[in-house]
Length: 255
Ligand SMILES: [Mn+2]
Image: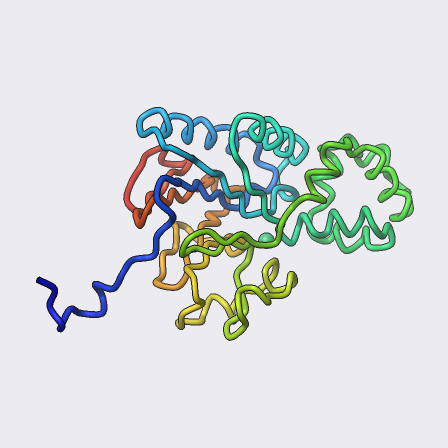
């Protein structure tokens, strides 16, 4: 018999629809090596615990900082052939798109470590030295394979599933999840991170590096700074259960 004095902490836990498992993956930032390792760990997990339907939700910032942005995109495109992927847009990915659409903004992207991404597409200091930024942007557009252009143009700014809302950076408190601006979804930090109230769904996000998965009542941060730490993290959500897989410990544990 249910007690009428059931404490609030026993309230219904956030959950996904029955039969669905999500692997949410944090900021990759040019570390194709770690992404490949994480996909292997996910395959091993699926082998041990088959799921009726498994969805990868990648939280964006695929490029910049790390050395192998091009290989990251190749790896994601190859994965999409075998697995169901939702790919979200990060602020770094947005700079790339902006440079494609408006070569005059190339300088903004370079300030965000875009030079590593250019190098991964074969635009090295040797062949870009002395180039005007707009020439560099055009050379990059010419070097980008059409499948990669389609990938970047197809990125979504958010994804809602069950009681979870996925976005690269977070959401603006007080604004309905359906009415968030792309700028907030890709960029927001302290106003979101410090907010202790309910967002309507549990927000799963990257963008702000943490040593370990940061699990709060209203949000879960999973950017473990792979570029510098070597730890790329996947949050595994199934029903109301949360688990963590990462490339540093290569072990499964409760979140
Ligand atoms: Mn970011």
